[in-house]
Image (cartoon, rainbow, N blue to C red; front, side, top):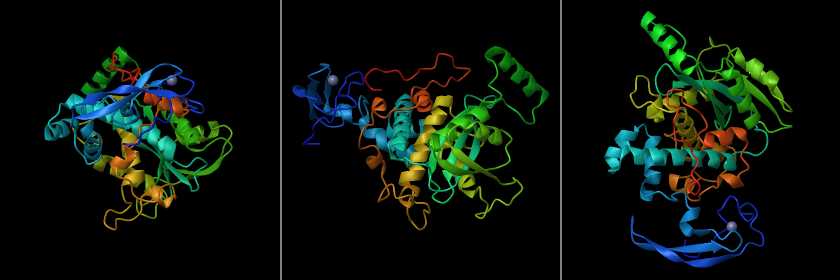
Length: 362
Ligand SMILES: [Zn+2]
C-alpha cells in the first residue's frame, strides 16, 4: 500500500469511474486513522468531478469502524457461528456483525461475478432448490443453486419466495391464513421464475449446457422459457439412491454443506435469518468460500473447485478474497444482481427494511 496510486475515480457518476484513460487526480492531504492503529491515510481529489477520496476508498473495509474484524467475521460466518456468538467472542455488537455480514455478502456477489467463467460452463450443471426460510417458518424460500457436475463450482444462486406447505396443525393453518391476509401470498410461479433467472445468469446468451435436476415440475417450464441458449435437460428420479454415483450428488453435497457451515440454515435453529436479503447475502458468501477457499476434501487438502476449473492457481484465504474493493457500477450488473445488491428483496413482515442505498459505501 506504500506505492498506492488510485486506479480510477471512485465516484460512480464520474466519467472516469469505468474508463480511467486520461484521468487526472490531485493529492489532497491526508487524514489520520486511530483504529486499529494510528496511521496517515492519503487523500486525493478527482480533477474532473472534484470528489475527494482516500486510499481507504479502494479497500473492502471502506467506512467500517471495526475494519480489522472483516475477515474474521467472514471466517466465523462460514464456520457455523450465529451473529450473536460471533459478536460475543469478538467483543463487538451483533449490529456490527450484521453490517459486516451484509458487506461481505455484497462483496461475495461481485467477487463471484468477477471471477467465475465468462463463457458457458464447460461441464453439465446440476440445479436444485435449497429449502430454508426467513423471518419465521411461515415464510419458506428456495435458494436455487447451479453447481458444476465435475468441479462442484457454484456458478450462480437465485432466491424464490414460497408459500408454507406440507403437514400443518389446524392452528398452524389458521395462522398461515391470517398472515396471508395481512401481507399477501408469494407468487405461485416463484420457482419457475427463479430457476429461469438462474439459468439465464449462468449460461450466457448463445451458449449451450446440459442441465441436470430432480423431477420438480417447475424446472421443465423454466427451461422452456429460456431464450437464446441451447439447454438439454436430464432428470434424475428422487427415488435414486443418494450416493456419490447419483448425478445430483454435487448439489446434494452443496445442500449439506450449506446447513453444516451456516448457522442460519440448521434444522431447529434460533439463528435463522430474519431477512430474505440476508439469506441471499449469506448464500453468496458461502458460495465464494466453497468455490475459492475450501479444499474439495478437507482430509486430503486438495484443490478448490476454482482450481479445478483453472480459475485460480492456489487456494484463496479470506484476506485474498477481501484484498480489493469491487465497485458495483464498474461490474455491469444485470437486473438480478442489481436487485440482490441493493437488497430490493422485500421480507413481507418487515416492510421498512433498510435497503442498500448508501451514496459512498455502495
Ligand atoms: Zn471523478
